[in-house]
Length: 249
Image (tube, one colour):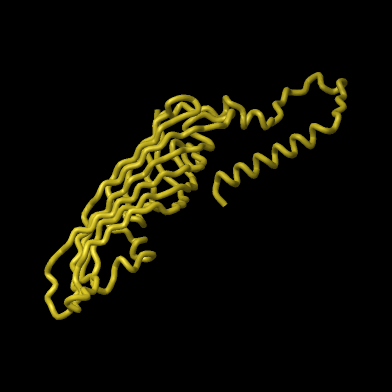
């Protein structure tokens, strides 16, 4: 269980006990209160109130370790716009997509002798809305429409006809554009001051544009030959993870 989950669980228990005790009348013996010190009793409003959850932090810089599995290495920068909104931009580069190796084995077919990756561009932009009345951007629960674009470049060497040497490299380009909605919670002091923990889940649609190559049998010659393979379609996309970073004024 995460630190935030434990904190919320304890807070809810305190809130429940607070409400339960409020149902019982309290009788006070005024004869013994002359020299008693004044004690401030805990109230859930003190913890969840606006003043206790306001923040002076306007910026956050984050990374997403999970995206490394996709060969995606962006740097996220978030800036508060108003008390309930912010914008988040990310730019970086792509490299070898390890998830492609696991779930799209048909791309790495036996006819491919070698594949060498070269850097591509990674970009993301999103607008964040923090609906809570007790927390201000850039902390708390948020809704965020986002667009994300990645380009993967690789040079592949084919050998369709095993009787001929394979010495030609072909450039394959893969472009993924995601249109999605993210729902998450961002904590500015999860386990240390100024440390950002940004938990999220996201869902939407992905435009998958692939310009690649494959071996196809030529009916006239009876031999396999290399042909261009293009794919352009929309597929559902779902993601979840956590970003880690620092916040500052």
